[in-house]
Length: 330
Image 1 (cartoon, rainbow, N blue to C red):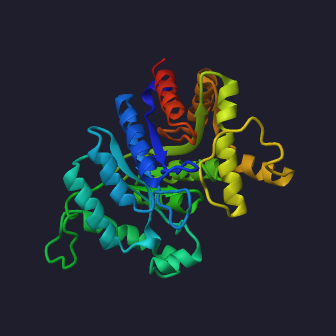
Image 2 (image 1 turned 120 degrees about the horizontal axis):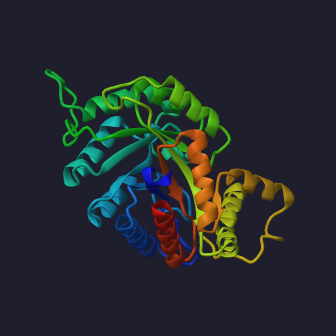
Image 3 (image 1 turned 30 degrees about the vertical axis):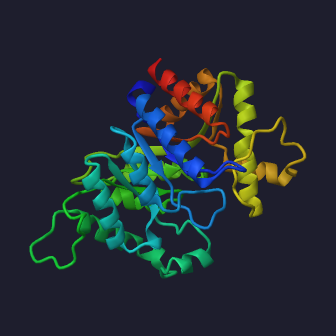
């Protein structure tokens, strides 16, 4: 079953504790290059602002960096938080990327600001911009389409590039909008799995064919930690536990080395919250992760998986890619 389902990656450019931004971005490029060699389809970068430990704030710049260092991998945003930006600016940025790297750029769009109110104000966007999301998606589609006769506002570069637009979401709103517009949809199960089944059901049952798609195309984002043994995978997964714990506490999100035990690092309530946050995660050896993915694909009708792999050691992270590629081919 998995042979026909593309595997892709979501990258936050997580900064390892005591490392540098430069080293982080260099590691991200090595990670993308390895993914390309192993047959992964997409490599998307998330937009985050004012978060110590996350280096993906200049998302379009990083997409250009990764695309420039690879040859066939599709590179895109997972996603651009549209309330933070005027549609014209996004159309120009992604139109430029599409001209530099033809048929390799994706534009995933999110509705949430993806940051705190202070940072949202610093980005100089209206606090009600999220309410205009459907309209701004339409404007962006128009700007990336071939220019119409008499059209006064044009994205240059951008017009005519028709960069593929995806809608991303962790609730039901974007699922409904993607279905109505006939656009591909990606559910953010890597951090908000609770509404996964309902959102995917709404998208798949309410989908209206469009010039973009004749049938629904659903991608599931989910955390994965795969290693040669179950014990090693569980050990490596404590890096994710520590980072989500830091998020809950409002602390910097540095990627920390794995620990032998989380006991003493969290209280009972925090443990439950972290495990709820990561409840969709597939953690284990190759066979265990394969079984988990096959179950989800069969149950939910998934067309593509997009993995977040929060592993502290870059070499063990690359090993996870190898194991994923092998289980897909088996």
